Length: 131
Image 1 (cartoon, rainbow, N blue to C red):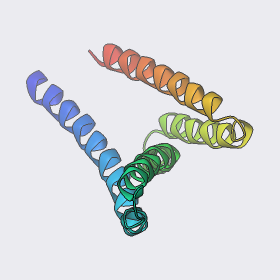
Image 2: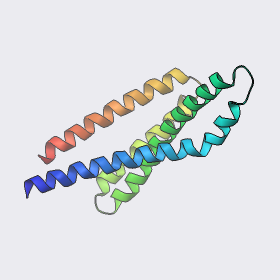
Image 3: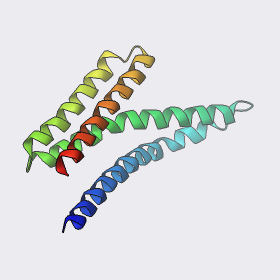
């Protein structure tokens, strides 16, 4: 029984990660025609296409974080309101961070690193409490 519970928990975390990655892929796919059009510019098209693709990937990653947190928060609100509130709070902090740090790109990058460090620490603490 204990092994099957651990298996279900691992499968759940894997599916959450998969859905997050699929959210990023979907946003990148939405903008891929624009990135492809940039590639037709003579002499610098290849470089600009790669740069635009990287910018779209980074933007998709940053946009997916609060979208995923909102989705998870709303899903958790029904059965575990505290966890749902934490997810919604994370999304709110990240969206506020977008507004505060939008003028300085480096600070937004540092903010996202800080955000993920805290999120990983919370996940590790939660898994240790469940064992």
